[in-house]
Image (cartoon, rainbow, N blue to C red):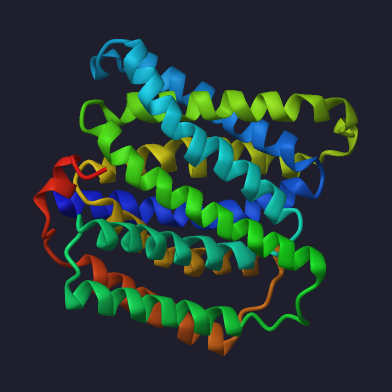
Length: 304
């Protein structure tokens, strides 16, 4: 796959990820966060299994592949979404749409720089710095009335999400070195979904199913198919061609998409300061990713 196509996959993925914060906020308003997580990824796992069965050319089943990809899924699907749905039940969607995508590439880059597996080019560092600065400006312009205890806890949980996604991106590169992206995504999502279902099932009896609106169900279906099944698959396909650092740096675009959806569907405000921060964030992301990879080992998958 060419890098240009990989960036198209990443752009679609980031738009879908941005929409996930808004849709998830709607859902957790009507059902426990554990139930929401289980239904989202349980549905996504079904979609991915069907896609895999309809496209058997992706390889044959092997327990070793299931264990490898499933272990990664416990990080990027199970742990991430336990924290994510808990966080979004406490804090605004716009907080998560800034905190998670900004810190994920920072943590990923920091890991690769420490281990010497990513070239610390001036362009990479400058782009990363500009992106973080733009996100800080963006976050400062949210215009809320201040932090409550619940919101602060939610934002701390969002930090945990960022760490999980960084680890997921790093470890997934090695898994993809010997497995088709669709099969790897299906195994990772399936194992992660199984863990979420185990956690969520005890909360099912306490859910007021009659109170769950048609809008929430529609958002749940959208989450399962778009920001989960398709987005995770596109992200894995992009990781075949670019490094984990490049893939996570493009997450700087998520705050822009997340805010647009929050304004349109949740009625959250969008300030001039946020607009400035969004522009700076995009500029930093573009600066950081529009360069050739310097470390071939990362690209081939031996770095993770």
